[in-house]
Amino acid sequence: MGESQERLRRRIGLLGVFSFGYADVGAGIYMTLGLVAAHAMAATPLAFAVASVSYILTALSYAELSSSMPEAGGGMIFAEKAFGRFVAFLTGWALLLDYVVTGSIFAMSTTGYLGHLVPVLKQGEFFGLTASILVLILVILNVIGIKESATFSAVLVLIDITGLSIILAIGYLTSFRPFFDQIKLGTAPTWDNFMYGTTVAMASYLGIEVVSQTAGETKRAGLNIPRAVKLVTIVVVAFSVLFSSLAVSVVGWETLASSEKDPAAVVVEHLPFGALLAVWISIIGMTVCYVATNTGIVGVSRMAYAMGRERMLPSVLTDLHKKFHTPYKAILLFAVIQIALAYAGHLGLAADLYNFGALLSYMVVNLSVVALRIKDPYRYRPYMVPGNLPLKIKNRRVLIPVGAILGFFSNLALWLMVVATHAEGRIVGFTWLFVGLLLYVTYARRNPKIPE
Image 1: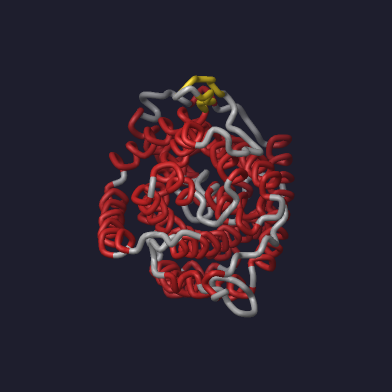
Image 2: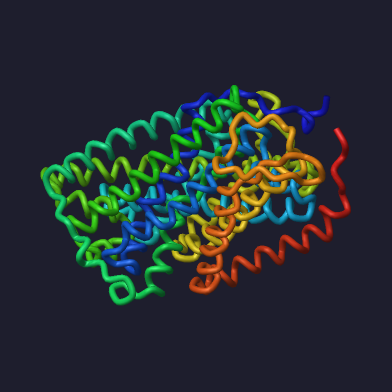
């Protein structure tokens, strides 16, 4: 068997899968809190709550598809089975953009919170250099092996969950004051600003795709994938709504809006023992954002590996390291882009692109659940999206997932808001899709998948 035909090994347990998913999704609150407040004002927690609806519905769709088709590729594989090669390629191409951005934007967020402890790192010449070095360290770790990478992620995630839970308890017991009378939707904030803030808040919930990317390396995937998705969803949504509510209550939305680089640290400075807690939350924010950086490196390499196996990208990307059995060429290739983006550091554009591609893929994933229920109704599904409507189609009883349909429309609404309100993201996002179309015409369409 050739090197490119080797399979990834199943070495990750429930905690490892949860850690990758939580890090990529949960780190968003550290990055977006100030940006959301700048637009949603006192309604910031409501913006996070509204955005969470779309995320929850999509997460459940990922749980069904990943547990019933546990292989690397995630949304791209689901789209191919549901709609064919062309839609699959566009889905994979959009996700590649998101993973590249993830690996760079969270390296910058890590540096931002590290800079709260070592202020010199916030200066331009040191900021980008530090972020790029952080990416490089994780690249080396991922070449060595995903089990080691998963263990590293699990330790940092447990530290984050414990620390943030303690800070929430202190904040609500000592400092929380009701602020809901300040919310005047339509005027403060205006509907346009609230919708804009909601699209930014959605960036806090992106990343659940990484769970499906590691499905091919997950032990007992049919059981562990749905469990991990549910745990990530519960913990992340709870933390996002609770912490944003505490933040607005303690410091007000104006202070949050002026603290884009390290908003969490600014909030806890106003709690009892604020100076000590600010150091603590900076460490927590730094660690979870660093794990999110790691998920970007894991995700982009596994997506490129899957697209190479499908002959949508050159097969060299499927080569596994002889000793470590990791897709090292895919890791190294995209690491060059991630390191360059981290060094340049355009946070606003990165956040726009983060939303653009992920919401497109989320729409396809939700529709894939519906299509595969119709095309392949007898497939074993360890977990199914709740809310099913029994219908008879072509003399076969089919369960139509209402939850997945609602997930599609909620993501469509958010994506349209992103396109309408984020100019830079719209231009670069559609440019990325255009380049993808050229690649499909010149390479993927001319190299059909070899039957296994």
